[in-house]
Image (tube, rainbow, N blue to C red; front, side):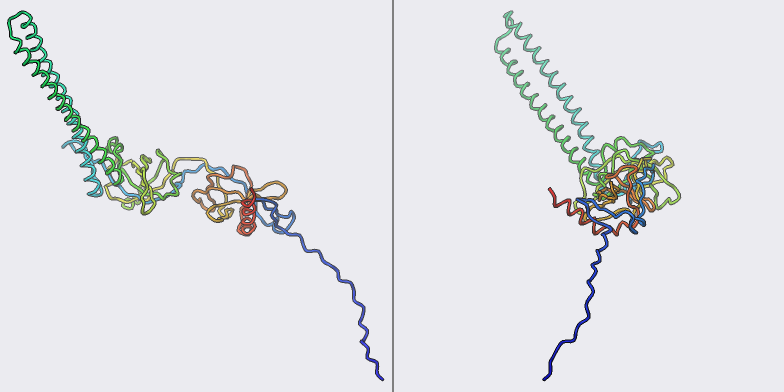
Length: 357
């Protein structure tokens, strides 16, 4: 007989459980990230303050063209406008004709009213004289009745003529309003044409819709024309169109450019820098910005090694930095480099904030 037995197994040693290493980066709450102090990542990140500087560089650069120039009459008459398109010239001419029609109809109404008053006053004197003669018995009552009827007929006739003159004046004013809108649709502004001087040229540029909040009337600008590359012209934003281009979602902006030497001509194109007035601006490194969805964020230092995912509105880049329009204040500390490494956790922190009421 044989006895089948299993060989004896050597005794096994108990398995030692190794605790997992602590997470270096964790989410502490809505819009909040924690970085473990003393960790290799905490030692490598660069923290920089939000800086306030004075800038005079343009906030936006666009392409524009001279659309109107007030040319000197050279002793042969008044200064006259030149335009870069037949459409603008036609709109301007029709507008000037409408203005002349208003002046003519205003004067015509004034004369009609004066004539009506003179005629009626003369007829009233005739009636008053006949009334005295009838009372004295030296004239017939029928003659007085005829003159009174004539006075009534004249009142009706004069009212009709005054009304017709008022209608003509109203129609000319309505036509002028129509021509103003046509002029605005071509890109020109009537008030600017009225007030411009001979050493000023009007430049038209189209600004993207997203920059509308950055453009203000009176804002300084610098223009460098392609035909005069070595010269820089200064000017101001004078008018902002009341409507956007429906096809391209662009806003028309009118500038006046100083041209005392009369070097510019209608149709000349230029590169225009908007917003050249000295201004205080906040700057952060461009690498500090995280673009998530349709918004931009930076990681702002909080308490106890936490970083707040903070939404900001950005302006123009300046070298390796970028302008911050809102969202942070001077002196705040932000992560300045390798911020992209925190993007997945920043998205989760933002989602956590959106999920909570």
